[in-house]
Image (cartoon, helix red, strand yellow):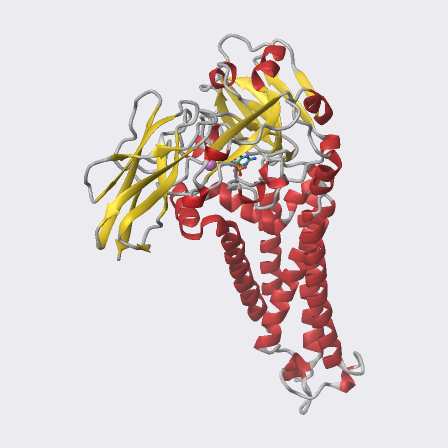
Amino acid sequence: MSTDTDPPAGTTLSRRTTISSPVAAAIGVLAVGVALGLGDLVAALTAPPSSPFLAVGDQFIRLTPEALKEFATSTFGVHDKQVLLASMAVVIAAVAVIGGLLSRRSVLPGTVLVVVLGLVGLSTAVASPTFTAAYLIAPLVALVGGVATFVGLHRLALASGGATGAEPDVEAGYARNPRRRLALGLGAAFAGAAVTGLLGRVLAASGGAEASRNAVGPLPSPGGAPASPPPDADFAASGTPTWITPNADFYRIDTALQVPQVSASSYQLRIHGMVDREITLSYDQLRARAALEAPITMCCVSNDIGGNLISNAVFLGVPLRDLLAEAGVRPGADQIASTSVDGFTTGTPVAACTDGRNAMLALGMNGQPLPVEHGFPVRMVVPGLYGFVSGCKWITDIELTTFDAFQPYWQQRGWAAQAPVKTQSRIDAPRDGATVPAGRVVVAGTAWAQHRGVARVEVRADSGAWQTATLAAEVSIDTWRMWRAELDLSPGAHTLQVRATDATGATQPEAFSLTIPDGATGWHTVDITAR
Ligand SMILES: Nc1nc2c(c(=O)[nH]1)N[C@H]1C(S)=C(S)[C@@H](COP(=O)(O)O)O[C@H]1N2
Ligand SMILES: [Mo]
C-alpha cells in the first residue's frame, strides 16, 4: 500500500489539527457574543423587539407557567427581569462553550450549534405577537455574523498550530505569525461583540420616547393648577408613605423586557369593534381633550398581603366615557379589549368606564407627561380595578367586544376576568421584626378600597380587642387612606394586626387567599419586640 497520503515524518500537522480547549471555548463564546451584539444593534436600527436575545426572553416570559413566574417575582421582586436575562446569558454561554469544545478538530459541530442558537433567535422573533417582516433582519444578520465569526476564528486557530503552545508553523505559508493573527482575531471578535452590544443597548434605550416626552412639554391642568393634596392626607411623619407617590417611586409591573419606545408625533389610537363609528386619534387630538384630572391609587393583583405594589398619583387624561359615547358602543359589547404596542392585552368591563367614575386614557401623571416606563404617550387608568384588567400602558388599540369573544393576556394564564380591587390594609410602622421602646407605640399605615372608600381601620395587638385608628383626610374614594393609632405595649414580643372596613360596611376577611386569580385576602400581621 502506498503511504503517500500519510503525513511525512517530522511535520507538525498533528498539532495543527487540534485546537486547545481554552481557545476552542473562547471561539464558541466570541462567535455567539458577536451574533448577539449584531442582533441587538441591527434590531435597534430596524425593529427593537426583534433583538434575538430579548426576543428569547420575551418568549420565555410568555410561556413560563404561572407558578414559576410567581416564584420569580416573589423571590427576585422587581429584579426578576435582570435575573431572567442573567440566567439566559449563563445558559447561552454554556452552550457556546460546548459548541467550541466539540469543534476542537472539525469546524462542523460548533457551526451547527451556532446555527441552532441563531434559529432559536429567529423563530422567537417570528413568534412575537407584533411580528412584521422587519423582525427577520436582526436575527438573520446575527446568524450569519455568528457563523462567519466561528468559522473564521476556527480557521485562524487551526493555522496557528492550535495554540497548544507549539511553535508557530512558519513554513505553512499563511501569515508570518499565525499565532499573532489568532490573537488579533480573538481580540477583534471580542471588541466587535462588546461594541455592537453596547451600541445596540444605547440605541434601544434612546429609542426616541424620552426625547419625544421632553418635546411634549408640560400638560396644563384643566383646572388651572393641579389641586395640591391637603396637608393631613397622610401620616408620613409616623411612617406611612406620602399620599402622592413621586413618579420615580411609583411601582412598576409589566411583561416588557425592553420598555416600548413610542413617539407622540407618530402615535395613533384606534377605537373599533362593536361601535357605530370607528375613531382614530393622534396624540395632539387626545391632548386637546384631556379635561379630566383626578387622583387614583393603582395597585397590582399580584400584591401580597403587606406588599408594596400600590401607588397613588394624580392622572390627567381623556374621560373614557366621552370617547365611548363618541364611538357609540353597540348593545351587547361588555368588554373593552386594549392592546399595547408590544402586544400585551387587557380586558376592562364597559360598565366600569361608563358608570361615572374617573376612567380615563391618561397622558399625564403628577403634572408631567406619563413617564416612558408607565406607558408614554398614553395608558388607560380605571379607579377601583386592578392594573391587569384596566391599566394598559403604551395603549394603541381599543376594541369593543364581549368577555365571551376575547381573553386578554393574564386571563389566558388563569387570572380572573372581573377583578375589582379588594379592600386591604397594611402596617407600615413599625416594620416586621422591629424593636421599639415599650409603652405607647405609634402604629401607622395605609388602607385602600378604591371606588368604595375606606370607612374604618382597626388595629390590635396579640389578638386582643380591636382599636379604631385615626384616619387621614379622605381626598377621594378612589385613593388610599392613611391611618394611625397608638397602642400600649408591655416589654416582650407582640403581634400586630390591621383590618379595614369599606364604605359599604364590608370588613376585609381574615381568611388568607392567594393573589391568583383575583387578589389576595387576609389581615396584614407584623411581629415586633417592645423593650
Ligand atoms: N403594556 C402593558 N401594560 C400593562 C402591563 C403590561 O405588562 N404591559 N401590566 C399591567 C399590570 S399587571 C399593572 S399592575 C399595571 C402597572 O402599571 P405601572 O407599572 O404604571 O404601575 O400596568 C398594567 N398595564
Ligand atoms: Mo398587576
